[in-house]
Image (cartoon, rainbow, N blue to C red; front, side, top):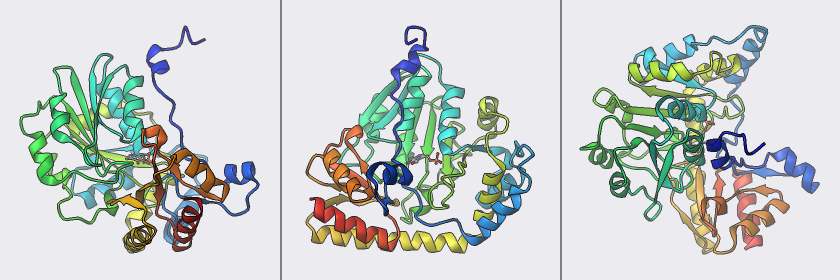
Amino acid sequence: MKTIANRHVLRAEPYVPGKPIDEVKRELGLKQVIKLASNESPFAPSPKVLKAIAAEAKNLNRYPDGQCFLLRQELAKRLKVAPEQIIFGNGSDEVIVMAIRAFIEPGNEVVIAKPSFLIYEIAAKLAGAKVKAVPLRNAFYDLDSMKRVVTEKTKMIFIGNPDNPAGTYVTQSEILDFLSNLRRDIVIFFDEAYFEYVLDKDYPDTLKLLSDYKNIIVARTFSKLYGLAGLRIGYGIADKEVVEILNRVREPFNVNSLAQAAALACLKDQAYYQRIAKFSLKEKKNIYAALGKMDVLYRESATNFILVEVKKNSSEVAREMLKRGVIVRDMAPWGMRYFIRMTIGTGKENKRFLQVLKEVL
Ligand SMILES: Cc1ncc(COP(=O)(O)O)c(C=O)c1O
């Protein structure tokens, strides 16, 4: 069948997700397994969110609201944008995919960083684009080099901010520099999946740029700090005209009703989630200190995950940790053969991670 498949589809590598906890338990016969591999929140949604989900479950015989009306109104108010400037997706993954479907034609060029979030490259290749991947410099985006590879065929540039797996971000002034003299008919996609974790003052306010730059799309998600990864809901914010274009490629009922109800309840329960953000930051500092004591190098991260330099074959280290019930991400598929990525878990999970890492190294 490969001879008749879409050739762009054959060119793209399938996305390999982190292993689910139950699969590891089944395969390795383990009772206790912790997953620190997919940058999820280690905490259940807040009681208010769980209550909203239960209430909404009674309406599951109905299709969801294709416009996400209530959530859209609340989010627009909080972000100080017009409701028509928001598009919701089945995870922010879907916002990335919709943007590519809406703007990319075969032969167009898409600029990304290397390594960065794998979906940019996969989705661009599926659409028949040529991907230009510019290496990070010391774990940071090299925006000058990214600008240099732009040609008349360039249609989109992805900036994961902060990016995964590096965990670093580009600052407000770096972005303004980058945007100056860049063609305005190139879509600049800021992927801010980890936005809620970043507390640094020089982290850019991309929403403020939207009135000047009609070519910017900003994507965020409820999968990370808000802990709704299993429900799949994220969103994009852009100029109304861009959102109108994105809506043309959106499936009519792409965001399910439980996700809409849960996301709305998350927005209204900020105190709970702010506590989690603070906790995550405190744990991150503790993990840095513990790794430092073990003489293990790491990259400082603005997110809920850390790249750890294991100085050994990362696939082996990840496999050995898995056998001991700790799922981390092997960075070899990103070309980083001596790194693993760990997501900050609960206090107990982080201690277990450190103990097992010590054993394995
Ligand atoms: C940089 C980045 N963008 C987007 C996503 C996708 O998140 P979701 O589709 O769950 O919103 C992830 C998930 O790991 C990510 O790391």
